[in-house]
Length: 478
Image (cartoon, rainbow, N blue to C red):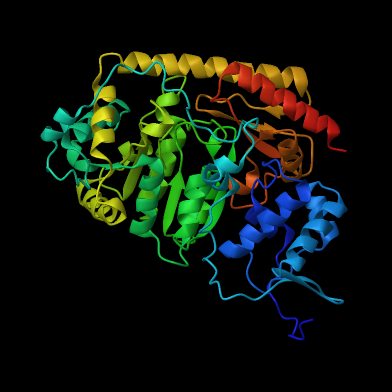
C-alpha cells in the first residue's frame, strides 16, 4: 500500500465520463468493457497518473449501471496493477512512466466512436454522427490516371488547392452572396482541417475563444487542442444573442467562432439584421471571426449573405464543405479569406499535409461543375426534409414527452428530454444498441444537461428503429 501524501489530481465524475466515451458498444461483459475503457483512458493520459478516481457508487450512478459493475471493473484493474486502493482514501491510478497527453488532445466521445468503430456492435444504430453516408444520386463523374497529367504542379503538392477547384469554389461562394475569386480560396481536407488551420493562425496557448453555445464539436476539439480556453455565448430561437456576444467581445478574446447558416446542433439560421449587428461588433472590436458555413448548402430555404459580406477586408475566415453536400467520405472543404490572410492559411495548410489529395480535388471539381449539381442540392434538401419528418414522426409516436424546434435545414435535431441528465440516459441508450450525441461534446458549458443531438442523416427505416430503441431505453431507465 502506498504511503505517498494525498495531494493528488482528482478524476471527477464528469472528467472520467468524458474520458471513457462510448464504452458500452462492444459485446464483452459490462464490467470488462468498463475496465477496458478506464485502462484506455489511463494509457492515453486522459485520466492522469496518481489521480483519485470516483467511488464505485458515484461512478455507477453516473454510468447508470449497478454498483457491482463498477466494483468488478475496478477489481480487474487493481489486479492488473493499473489501479490501487488506498485504505481510507479511495482508488487511485498507479504512477507510470507514460507521459500524459495535453488536455483536449483525445477529442470527444464522437471522435472516439469514429476511431473505434471496429470495436462497436454491428447492430448499433448511430444517431450521433451528422454525416451523409449514402453517395448514391451523385452526378456521374470519373477521374482516371490520364487526368493526373493535367495537375499543376506535377507533384500534386498543392497547399492552395487545384486552381480549377478553387475557381469552382469561388463561384459557389459568390452564389451565397459573398463575392469571391480563386486567390481568396484555400482547399482543405474537410471543414475540420479548415477550422484547425484558423486555430493555428490565430490562437496561442492560454488564449480565449468565444463560440456559439451549443456548437459544433469539431470546433471545440480544434480550439482545445490549440490550447485555448473556450467560452460560450448563449443562443435563443433565432441564433446567437448579440448582446451576450458584445459582452464577450469586451474581454478581448483571440477569436470568435460562429455558425451563421444552419447552426449545428440547433438548425437555426441567423437573420439578416442579426448578421449586420454582429458584423458591426466584429469590425469595432478588431477580433478575428471564423464563420462556419459548412452546412449552408443543406438549407431548406434561401439564406441571407454571410456575415463576411459586411466585412470585405476584415479578419474573417469563412469555412465551407463539399463533403456535406456530396458525401462525407469526399473529405474536401475550403477556407475563404481576404487574399493576404488566405496566403497565411495556405502556409499553415502546407505544414499539415502539403496539400489535399489531388484525386479527391479533381473529383470534387467535376461534381461541383456538373450540370446536375444544382439539381442534386435540391434533391438533398428534399430528401433531408423527408428524413427529418421521419425522425420527428417517430419521436411523436414513441417519445411524446420529448420536444424540439424544427430546424431550417442541416442534418440533426436538437432535442430536449424530460430528465436532469441526458449523459446518464445516453449510457442507458447504448445498452439498447443506439448512440446519441450528448451535450458534453457540444458545449463548453454545463447549460444543456437535458439535451441530445439526434441525426436524421440516415435512411427512414433506420431512424424509426433508432427511436424505437430510444423508447425502450427511456422506459427501462428507472
